[in-house]
Length: 254
Image (cartoon, rainbow, N blue to C red):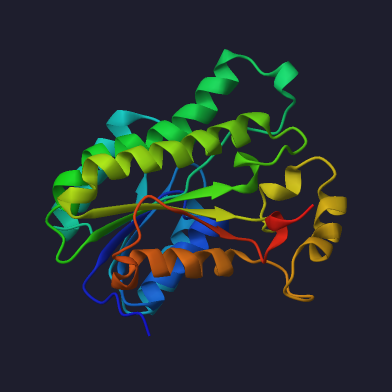
């Protein structure tokens, strides 16, 4: 049993989907949690209520992680209200589903700022707190299959996720010796509000059981959250700069 009692976790984009599952899983393991959102206030409050019902401290913070000032203000709030930060999950993502041939500078900037630069902003702002963590602090970023597979209308998101995985490895060089682990969880196809907007989503979801090697079981947000929980725990102290794929084996064959 992983016990995170006394630890404080910040999960970005945790009002729904994988972020929500991560926030709840960390709270179930004993962590106090800061729920971050940018548009879905009602959904964020529902997550906070569930965490509170578990007996954990919880706070809800609206912040756009693509904006450096928002990130710094959020971390200052965490420092003032909780006095520490041990676990940072960079999950918030954007990009929209469109062909690269229709993408413009605004689309590119939005995807790269939210999906890549946000991780840098978060670590920059949170490092003084993370360095004070008892034991090793943990930073976990969420990636997707689009970082190495071509998917319809997924070019901007996929390209940004590939960059995210590289940035995480390079961040490890800079903060690994300062008591911080940085790793990535690469999620396979999970049924969320976002992925349901992928072109031909019904066909893609219908065919995913043919790709995985775990029988009829389908990948869930909770499966991804379990990997995040592991990387957030002392069990992962010797794992640095890695990308762990959670997809039931779907990506290892044609």
